[in-house]
Image 1: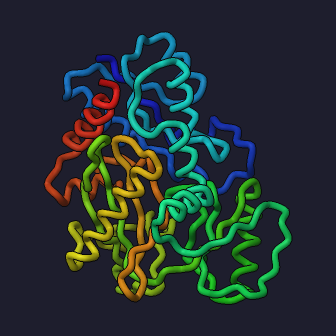
Image 2: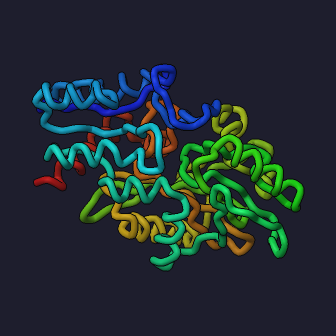
Image 3: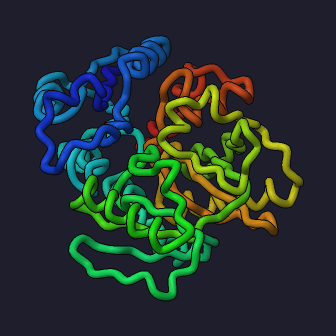
Length: 331
């Protein structure tokens, strides 16, 4: 088969003309050449031809002219709250098979406000929140702290810094103003901060999805109460965090995390592979934070790859499993 890969490269950022002010982390989700090389290598080891499609108009032209049989999609898109839905929508319009979420799931999962509504509506436990929209006047009366403030339409900890946890009115106003200045075209989500352990759970499959792994993300300094998996931490993960997969938890919590992830996988209509982030409170009750329907696939540093590796699964094996699950949906 001729397999195309759709993606965004960090090195192509300067070629883009975004409709919003440039923030130094706005393309944090974009991939490196190492990821594309590794992914293409895995596809070729399966006996397929790999075509690097990229994103935007060049990708569309290649798709139309290359007689692609299937697309392995990891493109995050650029511009707009539905940017992760651009490639899936295009491929569906062209009737080309592809991996990963459909347009609706891709759009809803990136929008943190919509994701919260779906999770809560499905019965999943998720921290209380409120949204502040662009131009909306907001007063700080009756706010219960601590909160964590996030831009509503971002992933990969974009807009989340060490000072995103706020515990008083002054800190709240300062962070709100910073977010509005740097991400002016989207709402700010204020969410109750859950000061416990942090877990990420990977689910793989479709008709009968299964838990690929449960991993605890722990601060090196041991300060769980104030730990934020922020941009600064992710960029220096070798020094700032350590991972445990499988985590050292009791059977009840492990089962709760697994059930919650599988439940949410279906609630969001995820496909092939997804990753879910949780934090636990003082009673070890897991609360859903976010879903990533296009989890990163860097061969070394991406969470889902780390989970697979700690369980003894090589990178090529992981890609092959995702690819086969995607193909099975069409058969």
